Length: 126
Image 1 (cartoon, one colour):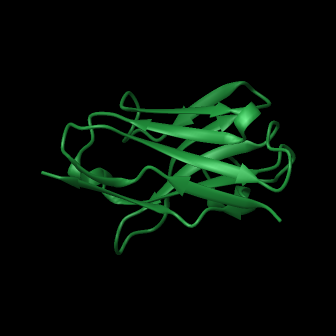
Image 2 (tube, one colour):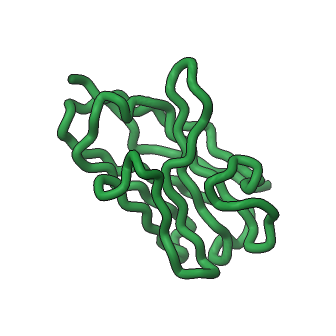
């Protein structure tokens, strides 16, 4: 059974940093695309960042580019999201997700991913 468990969320002041972790289990993830999404109250879940094994590439939403960094440790089946220079508008529940290398769709689309974590709350105070 595939499980994704996020951790590292919390309350931080604007300008601060947090590092989210997502521990995956239940299958081999080394060739998966791993993504982070977020959902603020009353808003749609939106793409934040993805790391694509097949292209050895990372991709970011424009709103977080230059502030957030996604990385992965395949030996630990864990993906990270380092968030710096946090802003109040970054406040949301953050979710990690995984997609097989042959999944249809594109990395920034929710439907591309087949498993999701339960989410971790990030709150940035002004």
